[in-house]
Image (tube, rainbow, N blue to C red):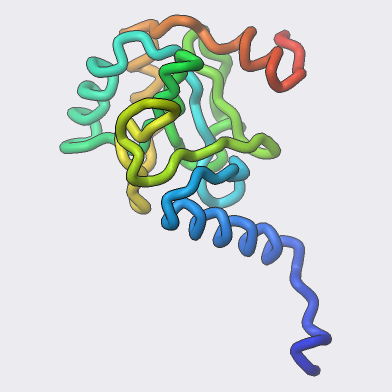
Length: 160
């Protein structure tokens, strides 16, 4: 079989897209990254007391919590959680969990201050946020605004 005859498997095409996206991040560009798959899902919350919430997660994860993107213009925090969290995330009044088929725009890795979305906690390859302690954190801090109606309207799906 020649190289021209090799066909890309469905899951390999997804992998290629993710590698290209990772390269864009490394090149200090924003990138639209598909959620789910083998990388991560995201829990969206209001900004609330972002500094206190992240400091608490730093303690829970001993030293530094997993990646968190702050979007001060929209008023959201995006907590990157393990893939598949969406399937196990029960409805929560202060956090909305999204996975596939949704897409998240990641800021360049070096952007750690506004303007625009920035890494409140950096993206480290071996660290995501644990969903169970994150749920407890949301219960404790109750960050507002709750994202549900706004995000549902943006994505075009009804709240039930």
